Image 1 (cartoon, rainbow, N blue to C red):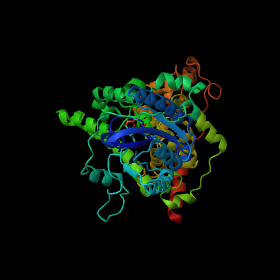
Image 2: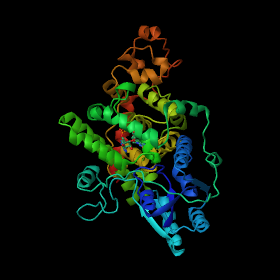
Image 3: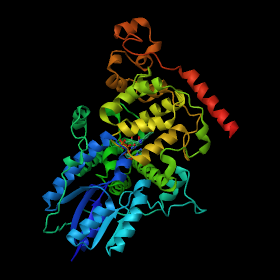
Image 4: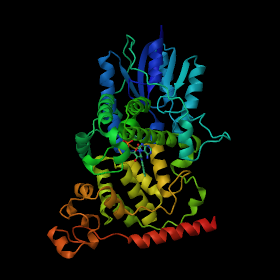
Amino acid sequence: MTTTIVWFRKDLRLHDHPALYEAASNGKVVSVFIWTPEDEKVYGGSEPSLWWLHHSLKEFEHRLNGLGIQLVIRKGDSLQILAELAQEIQADGVYFNERFEPEHRAKDEETVAMLRLLDLDVQIFRGNLLFNPYTLKNSKGDPFKVFTAYWKRSLEEFVPPPLPAPDLQGIESECSSMTVEALGFPSQRDWADCFQEIWNPGEQSAIGKWEDFMEEGLLYYGAERDLFAGESSAVSMLSPSIAAGDISVRSMWHSAKRVGDASVLPAVQNSTISFLRQLAWRDFAYYQLLWFPHFVDQPLLTYFTHFPWNGTVEQLERWEQGKTGYPLVDAGMRELKTTGVIHNRVRMVVASFLVKHLLIPWTEGSDWFRKSLIDYDMANNAMGWQWVAGTGIDAAPYFRIFNPTAQSEKFDPNGDYIRQWVPELADLPAPHIHKPWETPPALLREANVQLDLTYPRPIIDHKMARKRALQAYNELRKKD
Ligand SMILES: Cc1cc2nc3c(=O)[nH]c(=O)nc-3n(C[C@H](O)[C@H](O)[C@H](O)COP(=O)(O)OP(=O)(O)OC[C@H]3O[C@@H](n4cnc5c(N)ncnc54)[C@H](O)[C@@H]3O)c2cc1C
């Protein structure tokens, strides 16, 4: 009987974990989590994501312990720790799921080569993506640069069916291990009190949330996913669980597909397709990370390097704090601060506002998101920002400038989202809540709103900003 080390990374789960499944079917399993210098870069000091990781690790450890399996926790160089552990327990092999962040890829290559030199059976599995990013290519054999073509082609691909949680057999001896607490991730913070009320990290809660979503939100997803006000929104809110790997996207793919295939209602079929497409966008982000790893902080359309950014530090701070005078932008930025997430449509609006209205580099925005998002994901965040800024390979055209007022009027006509996150405007009736600066003074008085005192006037005029952005873009194109 063989003994295999399973190295857990952003995949703290028992279900559909190919490396764990394979190791368990060969014999005994030793589970290890290593906090490496590469992880420091990948998480980028995102305190909310580390808060999530702390609690997810605690839950995972608890579950493994319940099955009689120890979770060995260590900190340091992955190669050194895996080699030492293998020697300590006389392991036959090391199995893990592949990561695509450039930092991990570089280090993993070295780790695999050196461990193999030690005569260990080292196997890498693809457990965190739907499709094989190495083989998905266009007819010329090049990586896809347009999502629609990628999506069309990926529908011909085989998505491996999810694997069940395996029966696990551990080893008798106990290995030295750190506690989760000793890793020093933020677990108790002022802001975390609020997180605790909203979020429940870990595999079991992610699966429960997913099952609830399949009975409710998924059925309306196609028509309602763009609505962002509280109850009316039909999105899953599973991004932190997916980013941490608490839930498998492949199992989500298959179960969502089953819902669509079993329904005779075109609305439900469309909803599931629409949802699968969003999961494929995530795969496309990792695809870009693999083929264009510099896209994390450099524009993929290189001429944008010379874009005439000219926003100020004060404007950036007002955007970060949700004090721009545009209620939807402010609501989004304050939701981010309190909950660690923003609805996808509002992410697009606030990002577009920073880049196109204020002419502040998208990297400043992606950096703020990195620090603030509980679902921070290097690939998704970079793709989202490059898409909005128009600097990516498949991006919104630069002339698409989100009008923050029109967006809230369209997707939250009653202004409930603004009312929730910008309480100083809560008593303003719709439609005035979308643009307080155009509201008659009597109505403002009635709602206790004093412009410049209780709520700022717009930091910039929309029409002027739009014209300025288009001008800057056209000049850049002429130079190019
Ligand atoms: C500027 C910007 C930055 C972003 N940064 C991140 C990030 O750091 N981490 C992150 O997970 N997502 C990011 N996104 C994508 C998207 O906004 C979130 O995935 C989504 O809001 C999560 O909510 P949900 O789980 O309810 O999504 P649902 O609509 O329920 O979708 C299910 C899952 O599909 C994936 N998904 C959905 N939409 C997208 C998308 N547009 N791009 C890629 N994957 C998608 C996510 O994993 C999501 O959890 C960003 C988008 C923008 C515009």
